[in-house]
Length: 306
Image 1 (tube, helix red, strand yellow):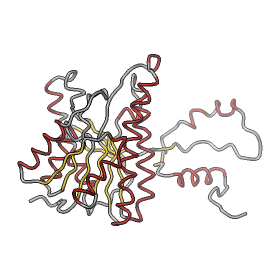
Image 2: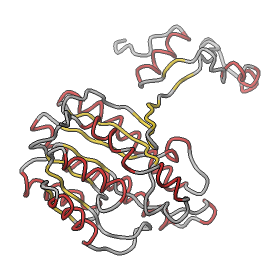
Image 3: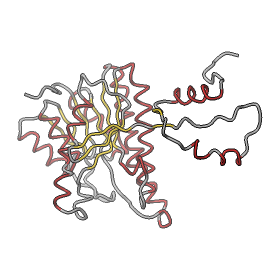
Image 4: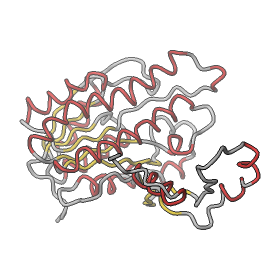
């Protein structure tokens, strides 16, 4: 018996017609969730539209005795996706922002269309879906939200300036919503999955595709979206049965004092110290930044009164 159950919960999954989204949909349905299977049915480069992919997943879920409904809207019309959940089931408890496309090209050859389409799908789409669900979650005092970044969004990747910057934007969005939603029991996390998909099946060998099955990512999503999960604002890399949490660190840095000017030459002279991570500490929030600077220069940057 699955201990993490989602009975009576409504789970909205974008891009759920194939790959990782489909795997999410099947698992959450197996655990009792009512699933909104969203998929525009376009190509991996954002062209075309079809209802077939979403319909197929809904049929699979129903054949296994689960509850699901299809939605074929673009994530750019996120309010329509959430409305499908409300019309069908009267609530929305979990949103998994999974839909995505690629337009890989070097920055020198990138067009405005390549840039804008990636942002419309990954950033605007995730915003629109989540924004439409936000007021519902606040009212019911419960919500679990996942955003999907990638290693490219965390570290950058050659030929993916559009994709990596969009995925990086979702890190900031996810962490901010974690802060804003916490008091209403709305927890938001960000995952960077390593999973084989229709975008990689033509370039990865069979053994790699098997090792990076979406099934190895799904357990993390289930855990983070569970009712009793208290994880909030986390960023995780996951794939091939490997699960890891990422954090940002800052070096101790060098403070020159605020009594006079500081030159670029002074900064250059102490560059090795500035970049020395031997005594690094986690950099967890804006407050931790102000605290760290304040300790180094002897001024309370968080003081609110004159």
